[in-house]
Length: 410
Ligand SMILES: Cc1cc2nc3c(=O)[nH]c(=O)nc-3n(C[C@H](O)[C@H](O)[C@H](O)COP(=O)(O)OP(=O)(O)OC[C@H]3O[C@@H](n4cnc5c(N)ncnc54)[C@H](O)[C@@H]3O)c2cc1C
Image (cartoon, rainbow, N blue to C red; front, side, top):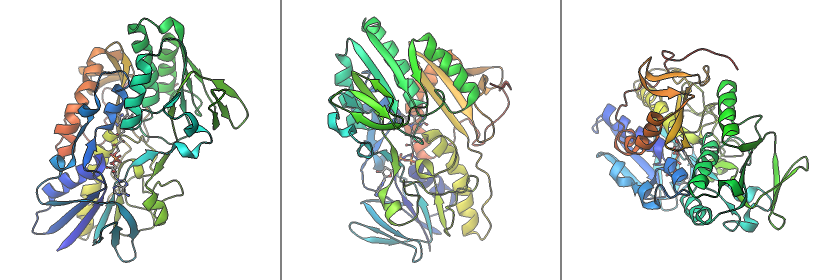
């Protein structure tokens, strides 16, 4: 009997477990999935916690609700991967495999930045963890004057639209609380603009300007000076803050670094199109832990799963993996006042204006603010729990569709 071992039961690992179990019967394939955490976090929901829209309980469910029958779920910490012997070690045991799927995601690492931890959860907060988002809610609720700085420490980081969402939502939240006039909001980024892709960057920068959010580009964070409440770049530029909301460096799982599977930051060199680990046999990679040049997002992990499962089954049947993944990403960007902006793109085609998913009809509009986009964003939680995590199809093709998109250049 063949054995597939999946490392990580977050978004990517859970979808693969479900799709693969549907594809290959129990009599032919043993599937095991390992995760150190029994709770599944809907991370996209973290954004709404600082603003009191979601409570922490609303973004967590037991992982076992999403592990299909016929898949063994092990709660344990993975400590070593030995591709030569096709063996994975955990704190409590070891598991042999015929094929391995790495889906261990990425996490924040504030300790990488000098001084960042000095005022952690005093004046410096994150919203990329449940604890961070919950603590930030308590701070933001009472914030009535001064300067909020949202700083991106370095690239890559997961959900590249989340920093913009945060400042747009903060603009809304402070207006509703009647204190927006007393609060400055600044987005300080190492990028040349608010987003990486030129057409979307130009359009999204206009939204930031309209919302009176100052953008400081090309800022490579060197350190946080907690006493004087400034962030400092490698060039020596300083930006002062009263409240610093940070996207700390994002790093992959230590076990991948220790096992020499990944680069020094924990991202696994992965073929952009087949999702096979570069330089290793019988290892596939999905989600945030890959180094493929698209967004680190749950929607991306979902699209990737179609290629990964097809290729895994092909290899088990003695055929070569096909270069099918196109970098497809679909992201709803919450922009406050019950509006959101939709971005849909892939490796080759940047986010463009138009209608989605049905050309001319929508109901969602790309690179525009709309109420229907906001409902798309809020529906995503239901879609995530009830369709995506159960490996069910959405009314969307895994490969990006050009229909409905209006070609333009920046
Ligand atoms: C604030 C925020 C907003 C976001 N908004 C959106 C959005 O609007 N839309 C969207 O599509 N995506 C969004 N995302 C991104 C999305 O949540 C991630 O891209 C997605 O969860 C990636 O899935 P993954 O399987 O790669 O990693 P994860 O879902 O993080 O799963 C990794 C799993 O591996 C486990 N693991 C790691 N190391 C070990 C180990 N050594 N031993 C055992 N287990 C281990 C972890 O416990 C975890 O369960 C957002 C993320 C954040 C933080």
